[in-house]
Image 1 (tube, rainbow, N blue to C red):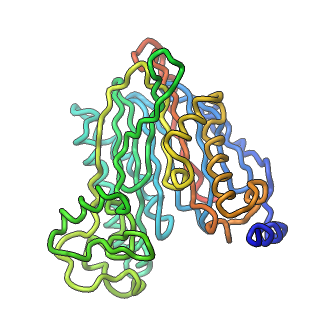
Image 2 (image 1 turned 60 degrees about the vertical axis):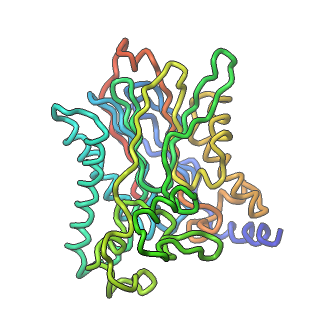
Length: 374
């Protein structure tokens, strides 16, 4: 209760304007982007195979989450990029991963797990080159990284590629009962999950300290919770594991091989008629909502505003954990908001199976991304 009272007092000093709208030059198909304090959202828009809803809320001093939606002749592409250590790796991934995917998949091979993996690795190589180029003036780029969650809908198949701990969950109708099941489609690489710890230990059998329990949380080398990510060059290339980066990031001893991996886990899912919608979200959402809670919220309401509704539910839970009201949390400025929640990105795709089967137009190309920062 003391915390709640204190934050209500602080909120009087740090209120942000509400209801501002960015009319911009976004096409009507993309929906209208609106702003409510640190929240940006598009309640509804249209992509190639149905409707979508999108929302981003800032928790960090500088927004480290990025996202984009693309729709065109190849199908549909969703990217959620959850940065850590700073915003630059996530911005780089958001700027380049889709372009690399598009270039690679435009050939005869088309969309395959192998072509998707090459797009990830090409993006990783590009960011590493940027780190090397800027080492003399911006060495902190070496300590920035990003989780990367990508979903691609092509020829009635969903491909999911993931680095890190963002997550995509499907809402799947259960027969004719009216009920819906939550099905997680992504593999996570947070070492607080036993399978992720086993995976990185298997990659580093001669390093008993590859994961360390620190302050009740498992961390790779006692530093980072994810075992796979884009960037984090200091944990992959010995030439960046030295001054002038901050001593807290430096690893002692010789680095025989990269500590973190930039190779995504990729799965494919033939889409069925009872597959209703997909929720793509950064870890900030899943800290506060279970898969089942998120799917139930989307299922029980209109598609319009789905992402914003999920965001509100997560923020209400974040406020409850700190014994304060959601109405008070909404006014907390970015200077202190990270004490309550991380950046959160949510994109909900609704699946129109008539369009997926090619019985209707996919509409004009769509390309939207989140703002660089608020």
